[in-house]
Image (cartoon, rainbow, N blue to C red; front, side):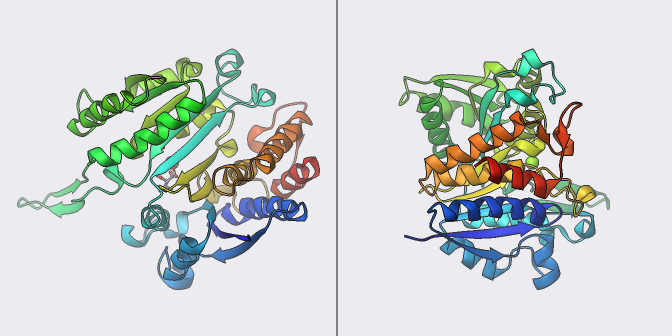
Length: 356
Ligand code: IPM
Ligand code: MG
């Protein structure tokens, strides 16, 4: 049966990198992948067109699709808008509306890029880490939130960090299940020494461990986890953490792999339907110049094939093709080093297709 894929390119480099990912999908169609693409607006592009970063039509397309491919949102142009209509709200809104609570952010170091990392190659060589980030709760969505004016006229900003046991358990299960299929080690990251909410997080993870006696659960405070990620990242197999900690730690982990331009992600709901996007942002400073790295988006397509479309052989093909291209020394600017060949966004997409 034909699978429907909603394509939401968004802002900045979004359209360029998504175009390359679509080229890869089209190439796979020739080999029998039965898909239909439907395009929608999100972020600043949607605001400009429809006055909202998440038009109803985009939600309709996305809800009826089997999977969603997203580029990135945001840019200088929209920074002064009210927070309620900023591009980022479109992204947060679709995550929430589709209940995409489980965000999987793998950080894998391709051996060919060991020198592109700012860390010593022996520290990162062989790195294969999965960060499982809770995506629809925590301080990103907690109420109350806002900025109020106190009696003395001073302004006060406030946000709420809140997690229910059921929310912690559901992301915990996803992480334990993933750990089970990997090396069987799960590190839950919290700030239980200071924040009650994450004390509950730790207790709930510990309880859940009773159902997963084959997984080795450990706990780490987030400050230490940030340090350990750059000190000795290979100690980790799977990490599970809150929305905000996961946002921060996954950016940190991305640099272990040489470039944030290499990291894909999947955001899944309870039934495995998902939205797939690179973890990097819209990079407005390099938008429209054909220099952005499309590999994170192309690798997000591989995740889509594996997790939602049940086409793991095609997913493997994409991942192998990316590896082959790196082997050939083909690099976008962010991962370029002396002795390799620098190419643009679309040439990188072409190279992946040629290697498929
Ligand atoms: C990410 C991004 C988003 C987030 C922004 C763009 C809202 O940083 O996907 O990591 O904070 O979740
Ligand atoms: Mg982020």
